[in-house]
Image 1 (cartoon, rainbow, N blue to C red):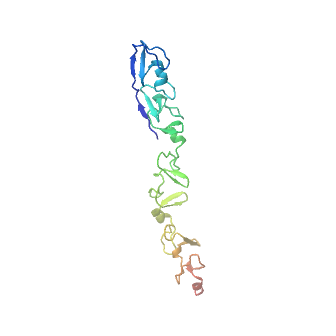
Image 2 (cartoon, rainbow, N blue to C red):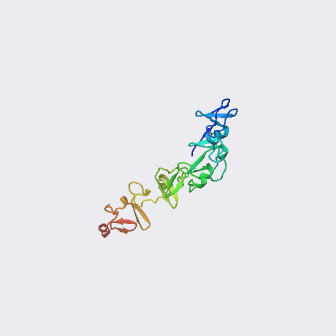
Image 3 (tube, rainbow, N blue to C red):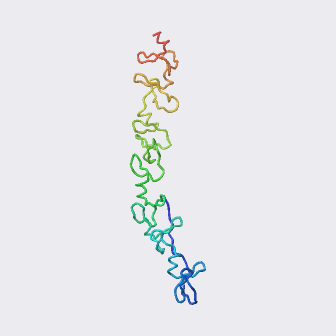
Length: 233
């Protein structure tokens, strides 16, 4: 968002010429006429308005005491309008876009990203997950509403859970140790068989305890055995 400067009238020396002088620009005699002195030159009021006074970039008329300035360009306050809705911006907030200027409402409508949850414009900050924009306050755990920006979380069927809520309410329980399988840290690899799941470090032979992750095994009466121990059953 940009800001502009409110400008007042410039100060020039104004008087009535008693001596014989000509206008610096049009060379008309100034004797007995009002004139303006600027930068050591004398000019008639007409030439002053044309060549010396600040002029509005929109209407090209001389600037008075109600004007706004942005990066060296000056407008009458009522001439500084939104490029989209044409409403007067005046001394209000605005957004520059190339050579155009937009009021806050039009900028949000045309250019701002909109949060996928609340569909409102994201005017500052915000986060992106899987190429979709969110307000940080909208990207929260579906269970406890904890903010998830910058935190570990798990997505399940377009629902987002913090680590604790995922462990307590969503995660499958390991058939070996009975603790949640979160996919975080140790045990991020999972063994699944016949509708049951194990941490990879919990998937071992019931009898000799050798780990069977990524190895041949025998499943007998809801228990896991290595091939050698299975022969002894």
